[in-house]
Length: 439
Ligand SMILES: Cc1cc2nc3c(=O)[nH]c(=O)nc-3n(C[C@H](O)[C@H](O)[C@H](O)COP(=O)(O)OP(=O)(O)OC[C@H]3O[C@@H](n4cnc5c(N)ncnc54)[C@H](O)[C@@H]3O)c2cc1C
Image 1 (tube, protein in one colour):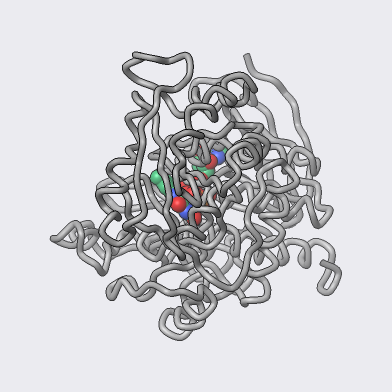
Image 2: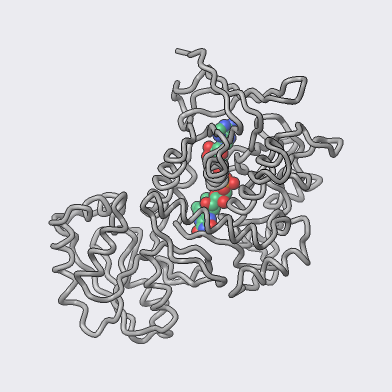
């Protein structure tokens, strides 16, 4: 069944990954009316950690303690990189606003400072990142000082092994030990799922039984780590309850995707944008985008996403449009034998000259693969360019991983790219719609 609904707004955001969510949040905070189209499924793969810039140059795999020093080096070496085109003050404001938005939706992050932080992963390696959920911060501190520390896991939770972490790190952290316990009420259950445990720990009775099992194991531990299952919507309260009852810092370690921190992040971002008045069409996708001849409005034709009929036949009329549709996995870019192209308008994509040049012979080549730098080229106002090098439409903008000249995975800058470019593009949208100086 199709509907004839049509809605209008200042800015339409296409995409609901990290970049689309950040764009919608920042647009709403600036008082722009906003409609967002797309499902946030990709966010389920997020670890909850917000990388800014951890590695540069990727070929040397150089890790940086200060993301801002890394950004300065990036700006010098790769001025066309999208992150090099956003000034440091804007990046600071973008991150502060983003984590404040998450905090207001019940997902607190540790205060941001000027440094990257190392976080323990579920296999005992260290991940360099920037924004850390408060529930994981005790692990960052413990990693720094390496005191006697207990890691707890649950029998049947296959995606996390405290023993594995200790095996990997133990030689460099002699006081690190592990214990496996039965999750209350699940004795003998062969396989447990992180989201189920997180939900179960929101019940006071289950929480208290778990704490009672852990308390006698603490010994001399000065901190205790768990897989990231300490609550879902009530995560902050569950984490606080564990800390209070155990009397030492308690920290979560991210598990493999799909992870509870990803579920929390998606829920918090959805709540944050909804609270600020963004209208979401989360089961819809944009099947066509057209611009009026006078250059004042764009029209988005919606279709139901993944078999859903929600939104099918609806139209959104917007004064500005932000493309935040991601690369190949997000479906913002599609590839065929002829090469890669943008999926809605068929916009030209910066890419290697031939398909043979997409990948290097060695999959793990430290320089990365050329196709991972493919994407849209934009002008100084974040507007995608047509084949002639001119903006496609005066108020069509692009943000996030769809942008060319970056390899966010190798640079460890996924969220930073999304958040910083969203901030810069929304400032431009506000200026273009209201006039310069009135953002
Ligand atoms: C496994 C994994 C782990 C990650 N871990 C981290 C991490 O630890 N730290 C970190 O900082 N970052 C991490 N990231 C990266 C980060 O979460 C984002 O994926 C990345 O920043 C890209 O975001 P994006 O919004 O640009 O694109 P995407 O996440 O790809 O989002 C694109 C969105 O556009 C939508 N879309 C596409 N076409 C249409 C259409 N026609 N109509 C409507 N909607 C459309 C899609 O449905 C999707 O919602 C991770 C990513 C993955 C995949």
